[in-house]
Image (cartoon, rainbow, N blue to C red):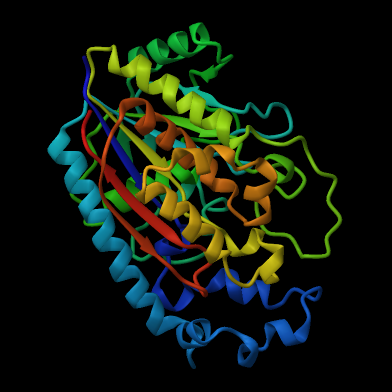
Length: 355
């Protein structure tokens, strides 16, 4: 039977930016005329948030946040390289990037052949990098030759269809030149030290943004904006079931596979209960407790509405990982919770034992 490694990480776009620009989402939110002035006033913020914001709008705190995240990416990269997979499968969201008005599938396996990814050309808008410098000082010619494994992707799609999942698949991009930022950023950050990326990779996008994928184009709106909501995305339970089926199919295959959840947790710009100024940390802490304790029932019991209320839409990317690890009986070897009030989202990293 094949061996499977489970990994979880963040694809937080502002990590691409210099420290002085990392709090840009909060700065933009503070301009929203629909948010009361008293909510915007730092004097009314929690003490930890005021300390992060400080007198420089988060620049010093950004350096600390970056240092923590980069150390965690290095740990995950070491686990991945030590495992030496035949393929890396990444679950991530498509945030109105490759899938738009003409089709919004709940899940898709991107069975691409080898392709060139130019991070600073292909995902400028979706990764918040349009017209901005990046933390590495790289130019538009920076690229990765990303190796695909269409054979494994097709095998997975066939197995999922036979398991009752009407899985979409694609052999080439639709509206995007390569991969959405949930996948590109995962690779950029796992290669933060620029040692290269030679692991064949399969992207599996999930419609995490559901009701806001087209109506809000999967990103920020003013809090009082009236949106013509779209249908919801798949439920947490359905995503977990898809992950469990993926694990069964891959475990019976001849390949060593690393499965990766790519997203931060509660996003401030999606969280109305905090006036979109900070993430819903209590909701994240409860799910992190459940992750640490292998309490899969708590994850499965969440609804789409629960995730939306807490700004946790992108946690649908973690649900397949949790479903896969439950199916395999895998043990959590290592995890961290990096909290923040200023830098939009809490970040969780995880490594599960090989099964």
